[in-house]
Length: 247
Figure 1 (tube, rainbow, N blue to C red):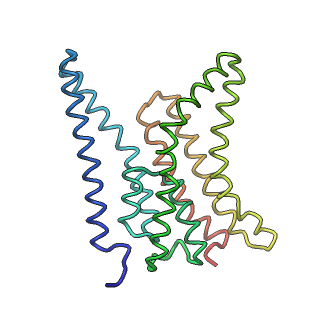
Figure 2: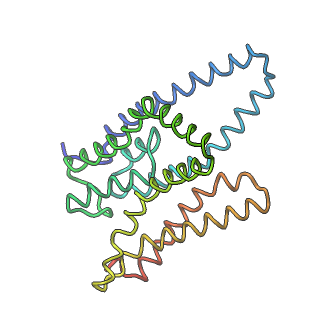
């Protein structure tokens, strides 16, 4: 049997896993509703809370859909659907998959047809993101305790430390964006494409943030991420044509 990243067997496996996750969600929702009833919380309040939570999950769902579409060209639909539906991040998954594909001498624009490369990509994605599941239960409490102690002793240094950790995380992804800028020396401007796309996304995010702040439109804040993602992907088309990435 020939390998295919979109084989029905893969879709069946992924659907089974996602169904299990959905079953867990339903289980805890039912338990929560029963507990709210025991606490005497009004049924209208519970219904309003569930409705509001469901509505505001649409924004992250759009971001997930954008990620699945972006990765489906090289990985098919099943694997991105699984990675981004259960536990994953579009920024991490794209970098992880891209590194393996590049190491294999392939292009992100090509559908992976080699099962060994496909399995390698799946392992890199899973092991990398799975590290958080292992470290969080054992490290988070001590880390938060340490940061709280620093904040209690010196609030200013506590804020600096917290911001430094966040910037350190962001810097890991910025390296991937700027890694090919040096190609300008050789006359190849394609390395600027990721930088320009990031800039376009940042501008859209900033504009939406300003509009949300000025107009007090809460839902605009929730949809800022998927809108900026889509805008960034759309901007990649003219930037690629302008900077010669397709050459």
